[in-house]
Image 1 (cartoon, rainbow, N blue to C red):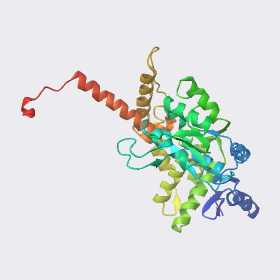
Image 2: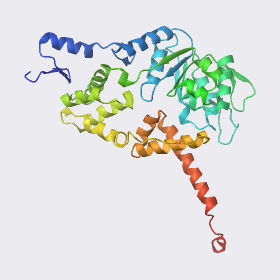
Image 3: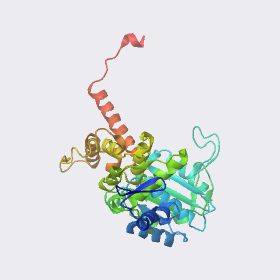
Length: 363
């Protein structure tokens, strides 16, 4: 081809001009290194594959650490699939998406009549995962009281359903994950150190997409091949899209990459251009790079957190998804925090500006 662009399956491979060059360029996409459903040829991913292969056959608890969107749940599933309990249940719970009032029932279950609305006995995640793997995502979002109860189960393999008089015994492998630095979480009091050491028998770090170099184009091509196969199409990336794949920082990691490719695929007639999707995601995030949040010494930690969240939300142009990615928390956690701030504001306004008593309304 005169422009130095060769086609491999449904994707364009820049720079492959001879047959040998084309074969070398396409081999990456036809036979990428993988571990289960995890794909990658970069050094960080090869190291991740080695760690998974070492720990999967054992019964050790695992703590997966990585930014939002890096694929921590997929890592947990691969560990389960490569374990001796692969034919048993894999149960996942996002601790940040469950309210503190309900998480105990989600984990341990409850007996009929133990509280209003409990019309039948319900098994919790531990019981449903008996013999298999329980994946606890965003474990640092769990309250400290609940962390104590979780620690006891990890130590004894026993727990009480809510309202039960007898203990239930299970054999469950726990794989936990967090998008926070565990050491910082312990330092600020959001993660108990004894729970950390119980969970992190074998810690695993999942690399960010920007650390994976050549994997970015590989994953983008795999996603495009997936969309093409679903719809029977043969769409391909533009040369400008290939350049942008490696130039962009991908703050949302693999999740953001897949969303950008999917959006470009939907909009494309034949040739995909990912730039509009990336440009819209960068709105507000790059225009204020020099801004900072100043917190007065002696401020409460909760107040400092609120200032940071609100400032980041404005920094991201009101985009809550991007805000959550920048802060390294789940979208559910962000919404919970914003709802708390809104409730406090409403209460403050109600106290500061009480409504007059309306006798006519009462009568």
